[in-house]
Amino acid sequence: MPPSPKDVLTTYLRGARHALVWKLESLSEREQRLPRTPTGTNLLGIVKHALNVEAVYFGPTFGRTWATPEELVADDGADPQADWYATAEESSAGILDLYRRVQAFADETIASLPLEAVGHVAHWGGEEVTLHQVMVHTVVDLQRHAGHADVLREQVDGAVGMLPWSTNLPDDPDWPAYVARLTALAERS
Image 1 (cartoon, rainbow, N blue to C red):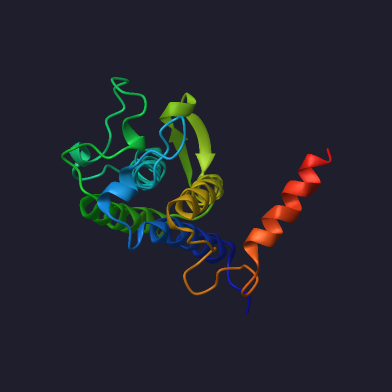
Image 2 (cartoon, rainbow, N blue to C red):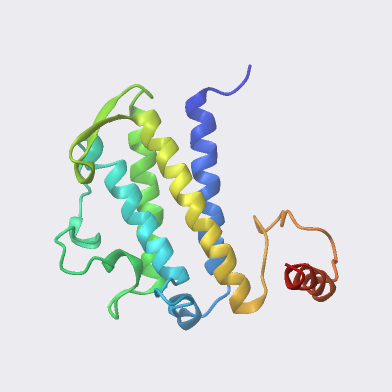
């Protein structure tokens, strides 16, 4: 028997989480925090954003409250980028632990509700949504950010790939030759 739609979505959600978190593995705290783009995007900040996204979409959207809201980024408008970086008081280990707990919280919401369950997204003006919609939205959002993390991690130390055990890349390519070929094509344009 094929898996249910909910099981499929849950599998993809867990895969997105894993792809995102493993991009931090073996990096120093500094490397995880260091801004890599002109807008300050950094690996640890992406994970902090993801955990806050999941806490909101699988919590208040469906009438559930996170037990310790002070651990999450307050939606008070004081710093609109507050969920995109670790503060001086936060550590990578602490953020990763919080994300694991948020994932368990989100998984409880998913397990306890049918895909047709209705919720309301406050920051969408209270728009009515289903668990199915929220799961798809969250998978898409996390995969988008996992792609950001892929590029950032490659800039740090050249580590690439979709998953630690399956890079989804050719074996032993001559990357400098490949990049030179692409550069030559671009130069002709």
